[in-house]
Structure formats: structure tokens, C-alpha cells
Image 1 (cartoon, rainbow, N blue to C red):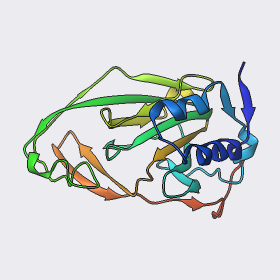
Image 2 (image 1 turned 90 degrees about the vertical axis):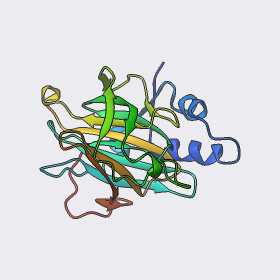
Image 3 (image 1 turned 120 degrees about the vertical axis):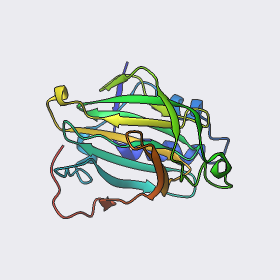
Image 4 (image 1 turned 30 degrees about the vertical axis):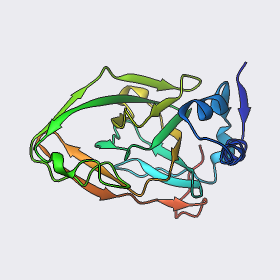
Length: 206
């Protein structure tokens, strides 16, 4: 039976995990049969016109919790997660997630840099898409891991409504490599928040 809980309950559960070994499975266990209450994220929720918005809910040395707000048609670039662990669950609406396998590039010397997965700079890239998976309210938690670190997320046009999703990263991620597969190039980009702790210009209710 699914339990509807405030986002603060999820944050408190993550804090308890910090005293032990953080694994993909331990966070999946925390999120099992849990639905984040939409009302508990109203203070963070705001949408922008031309891209998804990133709102910081909680951050410490081991975990970062974000509310991402999407309009139909918004999508991320294909990007890495620095070999960090990540989990995503839908609050409302729906997303499509496409994982990619890395099969090589012409800058292998830029791989496996201490503290990050890659400094980028390639001009020939071999990424191969896996089948796209739909993420829905009450559906399975989407994950990234140390072995599956590259993906793209989209709010498909057929979702037909504003979408909000909770994303958890361990450790926090301040930059990532973004791939332009059309022009065969990649670059590391800093990541920014649209709001921190619910402080934002124009909040919109979930």
C-alpha cells in the first residue's frame, strides 16, 4: 500500500541513512511504496517557459534533494551524473527517461578524472540509446548509478500537464558533462538552482 508522505519525511529518512553505507538499494528501500505529497512541495514549485526548473529542497555533504518542474516538451540534454548515485520519483505528471551506453570517444585521456567522471572536450562520441522508459506517479523510482551514469529526461508533449519530480543525488552534483550528439561534441557545464529553500520570484502551486 502506497503511503503519501511530506517531502520532509524523505529528507529525514535520507539523514538517517548518512550514518551507514549509502547504496542504490538503501534509498530505493526508503522510497518503496512512498508517494511524496504534492502539497508539501508547493513552496518550492515554479515553472519557467522554455526549460525545466531546478529548485533545491535540501543539501548536505552526502545528499542533494531537488524538485524539478517541467512543462510538456521540456527536456534535458543528454548528460552524465559524474558517476554519482541518483533517484527520481514523480509528484505529478510524467517523464520519459532514456539511458545511454558509452562506447567510446576521441578524448579517452579526459576520462576518470579524480572527483569527476570526465572533463569533456571530445569531438567524436559513440553513445547508444537504450529503450525509453516512462516514469509516472506511483511507478518505479528511476535511478542512475556508477555504471549507468548517462541519460536524458523529457516531459513528453502527450503528458498534457505540468510535471513535478523529486530528484535525489549522492553526493551533490555541481556540474556535469552535456553531450551534443548532432554536432559530436561535449562540454562540462555548471549546474544552477532556480530557487533555494522555496525562495523564488514567482511561485506557482502544484
